[in-house]
Image (cartoon, rainbow, N blue to C red; front, side, top):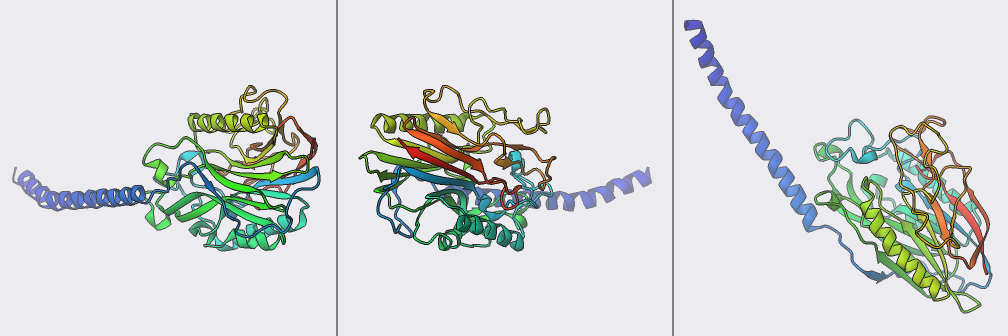
Length: 376
């Protein structure tokens, strides 16, 4: 009895400090979360409507004179998602913890990937380059200005930038603050050989639930209008639709908006050409067609075949993938690959050629796609 009484007194003596420590720790965690979410909510970038885009660099050529044009699309993955990289947020699983995966790449990796992007721009013949996930001041890419680096490789091209990711501090993974993603400033970069008559950032509808939305991208489209020699306008659209949208609800809202926009422009008699990272597969494209029966837990929505009249064309290279999933570093033949980067053209545009520029995902988790068209 004496022994039991002694043990009880000893336990009580240590239990009270332990309880106080636990309470203090829980209180500090709660304060951290409240401050983090309050700051994120207060500074949340919430652009609305349509806003003009001023050229960072003007184009040297005033107007389109030729009916044959070429376009490159590429999500450059902020120069942080080359072949050696995995990503903590793949599948949306890294909000609280990184799970041992990469949050930010090493600086030499970023330098290597950026050199690959610059080389592609310098060596590829095209009239327009539509790039996504282009950083101008982000911790994840060591605050390098991709616009300057790419623009220097494209002398005479106009440079336009539509910001879709502007967060002072992306604090995820929440419970690994020493590894936090940090400041993000990124967007859609369009490099144009010709000077548009107008350039606009168009905010797309749909958003994530709070608090996830304060750390996510605010999706938009960059819309450019070019007069042509037959008095029609070429309406060029740089696209990057939502990812990590398991239900597809946000994508559906964005696509409904784009559907109305595309049809309205075509009914005016204009040419419509849209391209980029749609974060979904073209109609009828089997998402696992490059790896049948080996989806590895991945899935991908298809654009509804009835999205637009059948005269419109979804243009892609069926032989080569444009996207690899970043669960792990890329291993050819093992990593899951699919196609989510492609073009949409209106019935008054003819496709001459399209091909993926196959880099085996050396510089990004996406691959560039080149297309040549003729305005009819």
